Length: 218
Picture (cartoon, rainbow, N blue to C red):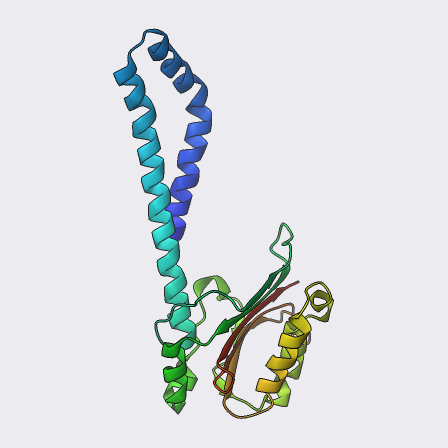
C-alpha cells in the first residue's frame, strides 16, 4: 500500500514538473487579469491535492512500520524516543550502518516474558523487502556460538569510533547476550555462505529493559 501511494506521488511530481511552466503561465495570466478567485482555486486545489496525497503516504508508512514491528516482536508496539541512536551516511545503494537503543516497550516485555516454543519458532516474520535474506527465529541467550560472526558483524568497530558512547552500548549488547533473560534474532544476507554481507539484528534485554535494533549493509 505504501509503495503504491509513494509511486503515485512520484508520478504526480513528474507530471507537475512537466506541466509547471504552462500552468504557471496560466496562473500569471489570471493574476494579470486580476481574476483573484480563479488564482485562489488555481493555487489552492493543487496544494490541497498534494497535501492529501502526502498525508496518505505518511499514514501508510506509519502503518507499514507498525506492521513490521508486530511481525518482528509478535505484538503491537510503539517505540518511544531512542535512548541512543546512530545512523551513518548511506551510499547510493543503501550501504551504511544504523544502531538504536530504546527503552523496552511494555507490550514487548510481556510478550517475551510469556514466550513459548511456538512463539519463538514463529517470529520474527521476515518482511517482503528481506525476502531474499535468511532469518533466524527468536532464541534466548546465552548466544549460540554459531552466531558469533553475526554479532561481530553487527557490532561495527569501524562505526563505534565515530560516535561517543556507542562502544558502551556494544558492551551492553554483549553482556545481555551472555546471560539468560535476553532474546535475539536476525535477518541476514550471506550470498557466499561463508561471509555475511548484510544484517538486521534484534535484541530484547528483559533484565536491563532495553531494545536494540541494528542494521549493517555493506
